[in-house]
Image (cartoon, rainbow, N blue to C red; front, side, top):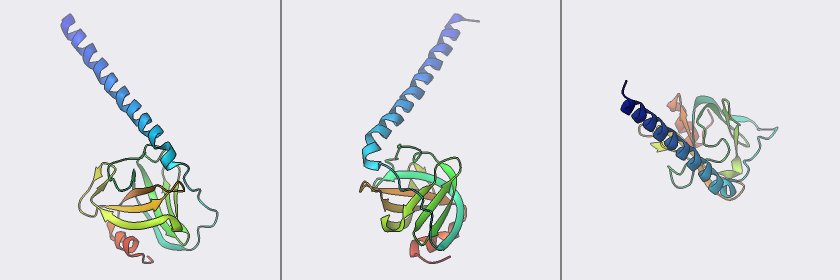
Length: 163
């Protein structure tokens, strides 16, 4: 065994660890910069109201600061992708995420619901992501993305129909 190869391997391993540490520090720094703009998320109320759209399974893609589709939010667990169920109620929208905190979007905070090709670095086919633009209690507008397992429910969301 050659010592040159050992040192080269150790050097690459240290370089890789440095890159991972820089990504981690960058993510934490982004979270600190966004903390005041994002603030506290609305709590899930005890009374959700009547169910307007039945739960759909899919993937919580992430949330971004509007209008940028790539400025991913790193505050709390908003930046964590997770499987989730998305349902619409009389008083708002509930995303129940596996292993993460639920996201409650009050009805009065919803600004628009549309489909997009991508969000938060996740790029799909045309109209592959359901995007909900809503206003946080701090006044900041964000886009929250959901990639449904069954995309045939998207028109109900976009058109505001009962399903």
